[in-house]
Amino acid sequence: MKPLRRLMLQIEKEQDFDRINWSEQADPLKMPTPGPITTEDLANAIKTTKSSTQAVPFEKYHKWMAEFGSV
Image (cartoon, rainbow, N blue to C red; front, side, top):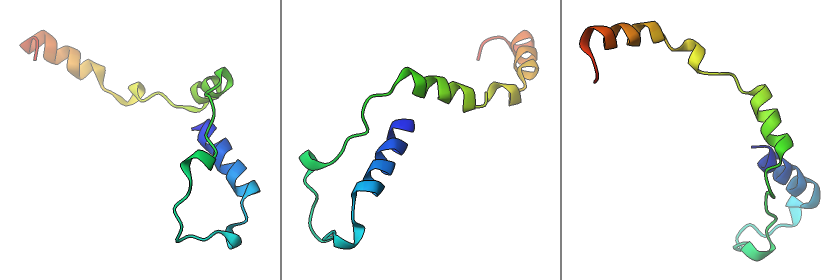
C-alpha cells in the first residue's frame, strides 16, 4: 500500500484538479506509476500489521482432528 500512498501524494501535489477536463480519457502512457515496493515498505507493513492468528481458536480445531480425523 505504501507505493500507492506515495503515488497518490505525488498526484495530489502535481495536479491542478480545477484544470482537468474530466470528460477526456487519460493517456495511460502519461500516468504516473506507483513505483517499486522497497524493503522499507515491507518492514513497515510487518511492523504495522496485526496477526490474525491470535483470534483463531486452534484448540477447537485440534480437538476436532483428534476426535474425527481429517476433513
